Image 1 (cartoon, rainbow, N blue to C red):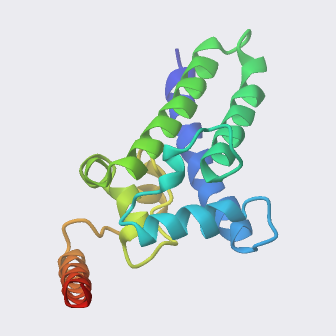
Image 2 (cartoon, rainbow, N blue to C red):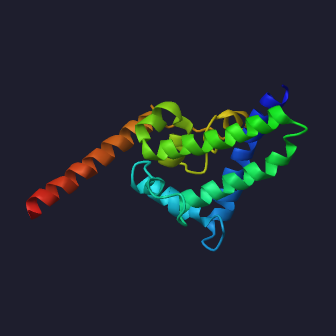
Image 3 (cartoon, rainbow, N blue to C red):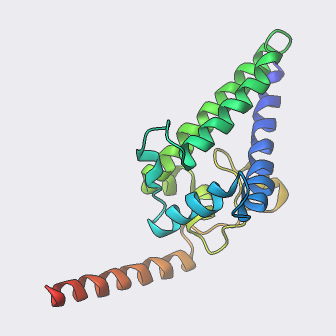
Length: 179
Protein backbone atom coordinates (compact mmCIF):
# COMPACT_ATOMS: atom_id res chain seq x y z
CA UNK A 1 0.00 0.00 0.00
CA UNK A 2 2.96 2.34 0.51
CA UNK A 3 3.33 2.19 -3.28
CA UNK A 4 0.27 4.40 -3.73
CA UNK A 5 1.60 7.62 -2.16
CA UNK A 6 5.08 6.92 -3.55
CA UNK A 7 3.68 6.60 -7.09
CA UNK A 8 1.65 9.80 -6.68
CA UNK A 9 4.77 11.76 -5.69
CA UNK A 10 6.94 10.11 -8.37
CA UNK A 11 4.31 10.83 -11.04
CA UNK A 12 4.12 14.48 -10.03
CA UNK A 13 7.92 14.82 -9.93
CA UNK A 14 8.24 13.10 -13.31
CA UNK A 15 5.61 15.41 -14.78
CA UNK A 16 7.51 18.46 -13.45
CA UNK A 17 10.94 17.27 -14.69
CA UNK A 18 9.68 16.19 -18.12
CA UNK A 19 7.73 19.40 -18.66
CA UNK A 20 10.51 21.73 -17.55
CA UNK A 21 13.65 20.00 -18.79
CA UNK A 22 12.46 17.99 -21.78
CA UNK A 23 9.38 19.66 -23.26
CA UNK A 24 10.53 23.23 -22.69
CA UNK A 25 14.32 23.05 -22.66
CA UNK A 26 14.81 20.51 -25.46
CA UNK A 27 11.50 21.43 -27.10
CA UNK A 28 12.61 25.00 -27.85
CA UNK A 29 14.93 23.59 -30.52
CA UNK A 30 12.79 23.22 -33.67
CA UNK A 31 14.79 20.14 -34.70
CA UNK A 32 14.14 18.32 -31.43
CA UNK A 33 11.79 15.36 -31.12
CA UNK A 34 10.08 17.38 -28.36
CA UNK A 35 9.61 20.57 -30.42
CA UNK A 36 5.90 19.83 -30.86
CA UNK A 37 5.24 20.88 -27.28
CA UNK A 38 6.60 24.40 -27.44
CA UNK A 39 6.09 25.21 -31.11
CA UNK A 40 2.73 23.52 -31.71
CA UNK A 41 0.96 23.00 -28.37
CA UNK A 42 1.97 26.28 -26.71
CA UNK A 43 1.42 28.25 -29.90
CA UNK A 44 -2.09 26.85 -30.34
CA UNK A 45 -2.96 27.36 -26.68
CA UNK A 46 -1.72 30.94 -26.54
CA UNK A 47 -3.39 31.94 -29.83
CA UNK A 48 -6.72 30.33 -28.94
CA UNK A 49 -7.22 31.25 -25.29
CA UNK A 50 -6.01 27.87 -23.96
CA UNK A 51 -7.76 25.78 -26.64
CA UNK A 52 -5.50 23.42 -28.60
CA UNK A 53 -7.46 22.20 -31.58
CA UNK A 54 -5.21 19.16 -32.03
CA UNK A 55 -7.20 17.51 -29.24
CA UNK A 56 -10.19 17.52 -31.61
CA UNK A 57 -8.28 15.39 -34.11
CA UNK A 58 -7.85 11.65 -34.16
CA UNK A 59 -5.07 10.53 -31.81
CA UNK A 60 -3.72 8.43 -34.68
CA UNK A 61 -2.33 11.39 -36.66
CA UNK A 62 1.15 12.87 -36.22
CA UNK A 63 0.58 16.00 -34.14
CA UNK A 64 1.03 17.26 -30.58
CA UNK A 65 -1.76 15.11 -29.12
CA UNK A 66 -0.59 11.86 -30.71
CA UNK A 67 3.03 12.52 -29.73
CA UNK A 68 1.97 13.22 -26.16
CA UNK A 69 -0.11 10.02 -26.12
CA UNK A 70 2.78 8.00 -27.53
CA UNK A 71 5.13 9.30 -24.81
CA UNK A 72 2.56 8.44 -22.13
CA UNK A 73 2.10 4.92 -23.52
CA UNK A 74 5.89 4.56 -23.45
CA UNK A 75 5.94 5.64 -19.80
CA UNK A 76 3.23 3.10 -19.01
CA UNK A 77 5.17 0.32 -20.72
CA UNK A 78 8.27 1.24 -18.73
CA UNK A 79 6.46 0.93 -15.38
CA UNK A 80 4.46 -2.19 -16.25
CA UNK A 81 7.28 -4.70 -15.50
CA UNK A 82 7.12 -3.59 -11.85
CA UNK A 83 3.58 -5.01 -11.47
CA UNK A 84 4.58 -8.41 -9.99
CA UNK A 85 6.74 -6.85 -7.26
CA UNK A 86 4.98 -3.51 -6.71
CA UNK A 87 1.34 -3.87 -7.80
CA UNK A 88 0.02 -0.84 -5.86
CA UNK A 89 2.82 1.37 -7.16
CA UNK A 90 2.30 0.13 -10.73
CA UNK A 91 -1.48 0.50 -10.61
CA UNK A 92 -1.21 4.01 -9.20
CA UNK A 93 1.43 5.00 -11.75
CA UNK A 94 -0.77 3.77 -14.60
CA UNK A 95 -3.73 5.60 -13.09
CA UNK A 96 -1.62 8.81 -12.94
CA UNK A 97 -0.66 8.45 -16.61
CA UNK A 98 -4.30 8.14 -17.63
CA UNK A 99 -5.36 10.94 -15.30
CA UNK A 100 -2.69 13.21 -16.79
CA UNK A 101 -3.82 12.56 -20.36
CA UNK A 102 -7.54 13.07 -19.70
CA UNK A 103 -7.12 16.16 -17.51
CA UNK A 104 -4.58 17.73 -19.85
CA UNK A 105 -6.81 17.06 -22.85
CA UNK A 106 -9.91 18.43 -21.12
CA UNK A 107 -8.05 21.55 -20.02
CA UNK A 108 -7.27 22.34 -23.68
CA UNK A 109 -10.79 21.59 -24.88
CA UNK A 110 -12.58 23.48 -22.08
CA UNK A 111 -10.58 26.50 -20.86
CA UNK A 112 -13.18 27.47 -18.25
CA UNK A 113 -12.94 23.99 -16.73
CA UNK A 114 -9.14 24.33 -16.70
CA UNK A 115 -9.28 27.78 -15.10
CA UNK A 116 -11.58 26.41 -12.39
CA UNK A 117 -10.03 22.96 -11.80
CA UNK A 118 -6.39 23.23 -12.91
CA UNK A 119 -5.60 26.94 -12.43
CA UNK A 120 -1.86 26.21 -12.22
CA UNK A 121 -1.97 24.70 -15.71
CA UNK A 122 -4.12 27.54 -17.02
CA UNK A 123 -1.52 29.90 -15.50
CA UNK A 124 1.24 28.01 -17.34
CA UNK A 125 -0.32 28.70 -20.74
CA UNK A 126 -2.17 31.98 -20.26
CA UNK A 127 -0.05 33.73 -17.63
CA UNK A 128 2.83 36.06 -18.46
CA UNK A 129 5.49 33.40 -17.71
CA UNK A 130 5.07 30.18 -19.69
CA UNK A 131 8.28 28.91 -18.06
CA UNK A 132 6.68 28.33 -14.66
CA UNK A 133 3.81 26.22 -13.31
CA UNK A 134 5.17 22.95 -14.72
CA UNK A 135 2.62 20.63 -13.10
CA UNK A 136 -0.64 19.70 -14.83
CA UNK A 137 -2.55 17.33 -12.52
CA UNK A 138 -1.45 18.56 -9.07
CA UNK A 139 0.74 21.60 -8.26
CA UNK A 140 2.79 19.79 -5.60
CA UNK A 141 6.26 20.05 -7.16
CA UNK A 142 5.69 23.64 -8.27
CA UNK A 143 4.75 24.53 -4.69
CA UNK A 144 7.66 22.59 -3.18
CA UNK A 145 10.24 23.88 -5.67
CA UNK A 146 9.03 27.48 -5.83
CA UNK A 147 8.01 27.44 -9.51
CA UNK A 148 4.32 28.16 -8.90
CA UNK A 149 3.35 31.62 -10.21
CA UNK A 150 -0.37 32.37 -9.74
CA UNK A 151 -2.17 34.24 -12.51
CA UNK A 152 -5.85 33.25 -12.27
CA UNK A 153 -7.72 35.82 -10.19
CA UNK A 154 -4.88 38.34 -10.16
CA UNK A 155 -4.98 41.98 -11.22
CA UNK A 156 -2.72 41.06 -14.15
CA UNK A 157 -5.26 38.53 -15.42
CA UNK A 158 -8.07 41.11 -15.16
CA UNK A 159 -6.00 43.59 -17.22
CA UNK A 160 -5.19 40.91 -19.82
CA UNK A 161 -8.87 39.93 -20.11
CA UNK A 162 -9.80 43.59 -20.64
CA UNK A 163 -7.09 43.96 -23.33
CA UNK A 164 -8.30 40.85 -25.17
CA UNK A 165 -11.90 42.07 -25.01
CA UNK A 166 -10.89 45.47 -26.41
CA UNK A 167 -8.92 43.84 -29.25
CA UNK A 168 -11.86 41.58 -30.03
CA UNK A 169 -14.31 44.50 -30.07
CA UNK A 170 -11.98 46.48 -32.34
CA UNK A 171 -11.63 43.54 -34.75
CA UNK A 172 -15.41 43.05 -34.77
CA UNK A 173 -15.95 46.75 -35.51
CA UNK A 174 -13.50 46.55 -38.46
CA UNK A 175 -15.34 43.53 -39.81
CA UNK A 176 -18.69 45.38 -39.66
CA UNK A 177 -17.23 48.43 -41.43
CA UNK A 178 -15.71 46.25 -44.15
CA UNK A 179 -19.03 44.46 -44.73
